[in-house]
Image (cartoon, rainbow, N blue to C red; front, side, top):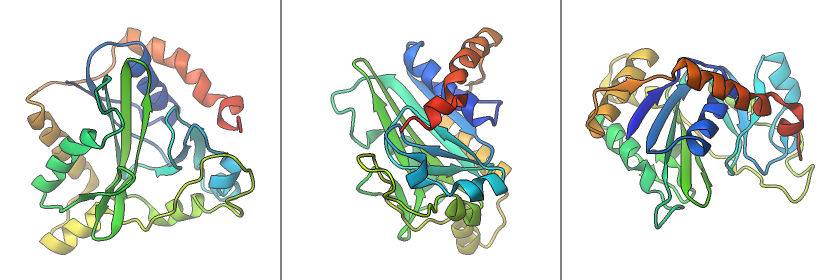
Length: 241
């Protein structure tokens, strides 16, 4: 397993990087990244059904569409994103890919449980939503991890006037959410800043996979990713339904 951390917080770049690793590269990857405030909708969703576009405009929250299905999610600098990419397995739609994430969270004494939609729950609140994209030979499974996200903006951005404005598309299932930071600080009585948590979380993932190497993209890879990024910046792609 090769671990890659993105030096970019640009959502369109990181979505393109996922596609690059999935479609162009061989081998197994865990891609980690943090995005600026944004809403990422599923491949079969309609923006109008999922997003309060006026709120997003007023709060400088950009909207993007990803390759995978599933529901709409909110990203910001308090949210760590993980993406597992590897050769197709016998059970490509199982929740097995979550095992490393659960293992690390339990190292922090965070008692997470897997939900029915391959999401992660903590004390009846969702802390991580996931989605998948599977081809003939490859699997991609990615998810969010709410550590210290702005939940007020999350709720505002994912609060459209009408959720059924456009029919025959995938609809998100709203869930109560919480930040992991609240749980840690309440239980342990210590302040655990976002950068420190992310650093420790990534180190524990590296330990889990037995590697001391955290890669970034080469200049040549970045050039290829920038070509793919054009799709994610295209209004025709984002508003295709």
